[in-house]
Each structure stands twice: as C-alpha cells, then as structure tokens.
Length: 229
View 1 (cartoon, one colour):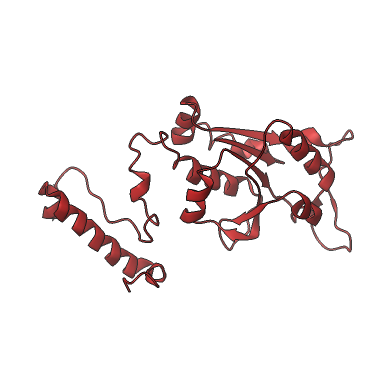
View 2 (spheres, rainbow, N blue to C red):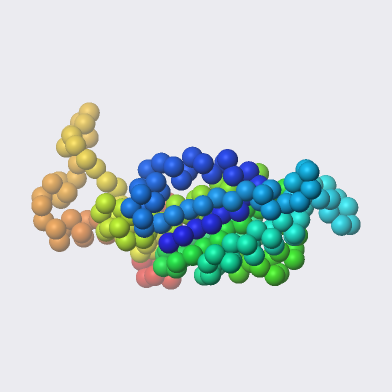
C-alpha cells in the first residue's frame, strides 16, 4: 500500500511515521507513506496557499490552485483508490472503514487547515471525506496520522502476529476483553484461573463473555441490533 499525504505543515507528520509499527511496515516494503508540502505547489515569492473568504467572515480558506496542482501532479504517478479529505464534517472513521481502506493499493489524503478548503476542491477532486470525531483540530495532520496508523496495521505482514489485529476492539462489534501477563498474582489480585488452565475452548468462552460484559458496561450502544443486549 502507498499513502500520499498533502499538508501545509508536513513537520507535524515526521514523528508518527518514523517509529514503531509504521516504520517497520515501510522497512518491510509492505506500506509506504509520503508527505507532500502544499507550499511546494504554490506560486509567488510568499508561496501563498490561503486567502480571505468570499463574503467575509473570520478565518482564511485554503486556495484551490495549489491543491489542484499538487493532486494532479501526484495523479500522474499513480491511480488512487480514494482521495480523502480530513474534515470535521466527514463520515466518522471507525474500524469497519479502516478494514475496507486497508484492502486498497493507493490512497491520497488531504489535510485541512484554517477554515477549510475551497469547496470546489471537495466538488472536483475528493472521493471520500473522513472525520475522526465531533471536535475540531488545528489541522488534519494528526487525524491523517490516526487514519493511516489504523489502516496500515491491518495489512497482512505488518504485525508480527497477524491474528492480533483480528482480536482488537470493534472487529467483532465488541470491546476487547481484559488481558493479563506475569506475575500471576500482584498485591493479592490474581489472574482469572481459566486463563491459566490451558483449556482453549474455556478460555475462548471466557474472553467472549468478558467482551460482552465490558461492552455492556462501557459501550452499550455497540450491542444494539446484534442480539447481545
């Protein structure tokens, strides 16, 4: 998989992709992420990428011309399965969306900034709009990093244990069950005996019941419609 990200402040994305799982994915040749500075596609001495909004009002708007120039240049190199715009009014990102996007080859992500982009960018170029929650960030960079991380870790070969991602919260509509490691007892609190039994069927049953119980306590909304209410 290849992900291109367009940003006004590319420095914000240097850290997330140079460590841990995302770095290993690139080293293995499984996934690659490239961040593009939008100002490289702007004209004039100031490399301006924003301007005042027609009609007045507070805040600046990202101009269409640098964005169009950048997208069209990148499209000459590859065909994108989706051109994504990170925006608070997009579709809410969830595990199901991550699963679907992890199966494509090429993604282009545009990070919003200021008061957003000229609407014509969304009309002419964007194929998918994504939000990571009902709140506003200073820009779309951190949101883009969240989306990329959630997608890339699902690609086969990225995680050392490929079954790990399949047992994460939300994969089956439930929160993940509690997990334990050594020591088997700490300050008088022990690990549930079933987890020490080596009985795989009983362990699986306990984990499922614990998942349902935890989901009922913390996220009862997830249980609606699946018969576990």
